[in-house]
Image (cartoon, rainbow, N blue to C red; front, side, top):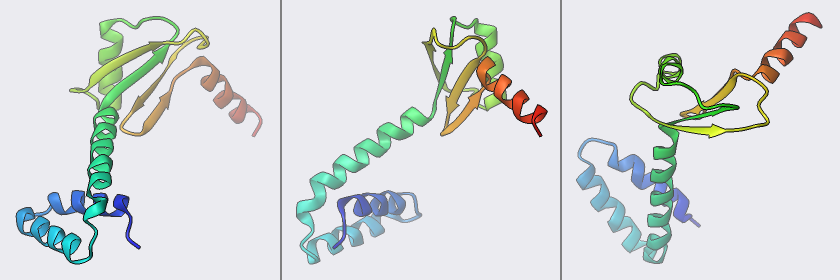
Length: 125
């Protein structure tokens, strides 16, 4: 049996193709012919969740012990390629030094703890 999640991903893929109107019409015809209309509310919910996650991915999330200056944030944007992204800062007292950044599914860990761990790996090889 086909899941609402699969239908949502399929619909999203169809919407990104040329002539998507015809493809969506075919998709809806398939839904109707296979008595899958009851899954449409769940498909919509999946699409809304995927849109929300997509918006979150494009947010540059910075965690540090102290609030960073505008120049430091600008430098981080350049390094991560997040030039036009929204920025959220999280003050995390557990960070001893440095910072960590999350952007588009990538984590850039510039915390002092991570730097020490990397140095330890190098020295113990």
